[in-house]
Length: 226
Image (cartoon, rainbow, N blue to C red; front, top):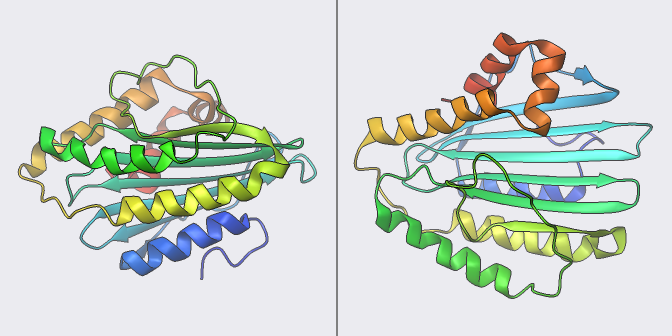
């Protein structure tokens, strides 16, 4: 079973268990992207079809003699009208960074109301050290209710607690049906295409290391399932 190895952080393994209890997961073949080594980091990538929801991918990376570790979870709802959700947790050189972002890939405006529950949750963690997310090309479609924190490793326990509550809340959101499957898929595909076109820290790393076409395949088939 995935996540039994030593690379994965304890919190990510617990998040996987939460998701596994909420969704029936069917593994997707990730051959060709197993054990990628890029800039001194070793990547382990797994992807699943989530019955009744869409696509979920998990990626963890470790390197620099154990000084840096990163876990990423991407939830791409295609069968429920929920926002696309990405989670990143990065531990490096004594610091801990927690990022959770929601992107508008919904069909109906009413579906955006679900972020209210996530905003309420994060409001209870006002004391956590906030991280300035900066300006990005995707700000127009990034929804409120996300997470952006950074602190010393002593804060990791609080980050773990929030992460688990956040993922549990997301997967307990109402089952909102997709009224137009074509529009839903197109909005999701638009986001992935823009990500490949405009780039970002991790996107650029992959493009520079394995090329644009192979990165497209990784994003389309494995990370986002579009």
